[in-house]
Image 1 (tube, rainbow over the protein chains, first blue to last red):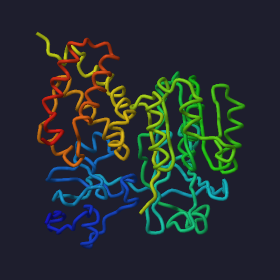
Image 2 (cartoon, rainbow over the protein chains, first blue to last red):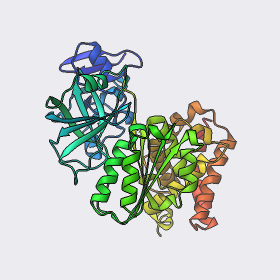
Image 3 (cartoon, rainbow over the protein chains, first blue to last red):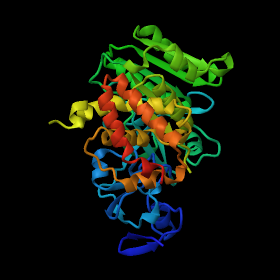
Image 4 (cartoon, each protein chain N blue to C red):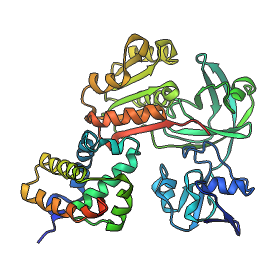
Length: 312
Length: 118
């Protein structure tokens, strides 16, 4: 039986348990959120022991080098000696500046901006005793505030609270920014392809608006998929932008109209090999789209993904 | 005398080959199903490590790792041949001579028994 060493105690781990779960089961209050390796709330540092690769997936090279692990993704049978991450990400208290219903399912939230970030990154909201990750829809070059587009789930822990109880003027705690699915302002000639479903549109909208505000020269395709067109909550905004900017093409893919977003992207768009791709949305969608784009010629290291996983 | 790895173009050649090779593997009906549920980031890194090894480059590959990684997959000669064919086709596409492709295949063969758990 393996042990996890934490704060001078050895804690016996159970089979198939993560380091996070072992420590929680033994009564340690470890900050955590999504439990699927995305939000980085449960970051810990390994002092001793061999780190399983799985526990560092998605971390930056610097974090890896420092022995940081996502404790929710780290199998406990490795028998590690861990401690709290040395520099816990700073918590910022921000003000709710605005709330807007973008569609029946999507809530727009404006927050005061405590830090600089890159378009397409995400932040964590900490409220109602839980932590959830949301991508930024705002453009750092264009907006003084942070903008989130949040899918509200009736049985969710955080989104019903945000929808019903959080008021304009309230304070809320955020950490971040996180993520590497972000716009690179150094390559203004680069053709971009932005593909998403659901609130995957949110980081894409941030990347798009940042690119346009930086006078991006390359062609930008944005393709959003949905069951029916009225589910695309940014439809009107994107239609208007594509009228305004000649380098922008917007294509909604509605299943109801017989369109298949995978087929559209891989067969109707030319020369994926020359494009920088951003794919955002539900995990299963992102995985499938990424594979199909790669097989259709896109370069692996130029496909950037933001995979939304359901919090567990 | 320069090494095979240098003659092939070193790390740059590996970078050029990895997408082409991985794409071929994913499209090969004989073996593509092994990759249906694997994470593409991790897999691309493994493909890169494999190519570096097969190109005769510096790598941390050991027979034990290869055996451990593949032992639950019930691989057969056919699967192995598929990988080597895709490797050869990748190199042909990149303009590598047949002679050098033979040398690469010979290096790959050194881990064959480990991969097939024999």
